[in-house]
Image 1 (cartoon, rainbow, N blue to C red):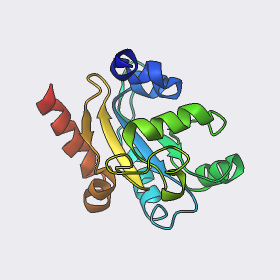
Image 2: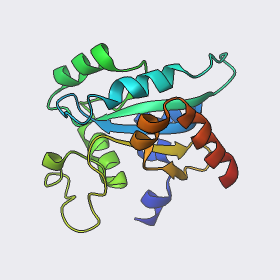
Image 3: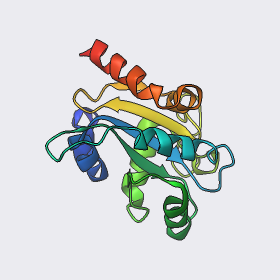
Image 4: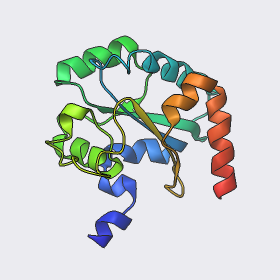
Length: 170
């Protein structure tokens, strides 16, 4: 159990390997296309994501987003991603165990998923959707669990705020 808790995120969750390796900050976006609270957040996150300066192949992006879907099926997820999302990564819908384990690790999911994920009870389901958790890719420290509030209030300035927090923690 200790080895699982202490293992790097990229070992626990293969879908995170490339985003962690290619960026300084990982943003886990827990959301769904059917959630009315997620609808206004997704285009703002896309704008923030696209505001990053272009990097060369040898440089890391400041942030990479990974969509952790609570959509009802793969078609719903793909349609939403094609219509509204940025060109960011996602945990494949078919990787049900990985998707469930990421939600369990961070305590973030839609309310209707909580019973199936054993996230009922005090302290288990910490966050509903939408949730944006920002993580330092080097240390894997959580920089903020309030990424949604940050981007809705500060837009692209959130990148600098998170990067400043990251620099302080190093």
